[in-house]
Length: 76
Image (cartoon, rainbow, N blue to C red; front, side, top):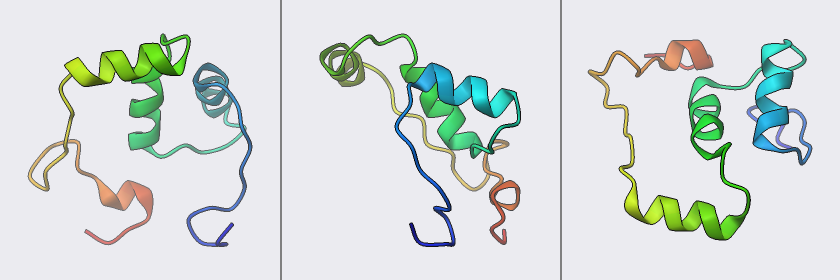
C-alpha cells in the first residue's frame, strides 16, 4: 500500500466489489467500476481472455465526456 492511491486492499469478486461500492462500503473509481462491470459475467480467466481478444478497448480521451480526473481527485 502506498498511502496515496492504494489505502487498502482485498481479493473479492467483481460482483462483490460493485455491490460493496454501491452499498458505500468503499469507493471505487469510475474506471474501475467500468472495468468490473465489463468482466463481471466471465466465470474464469480463460473466458475473460477469450472475450478480451475480440472486444474493443475503450479509451477515454481528454475531450470525452467520460474523462473526469477531478472525480478521481486529480487536477484537470
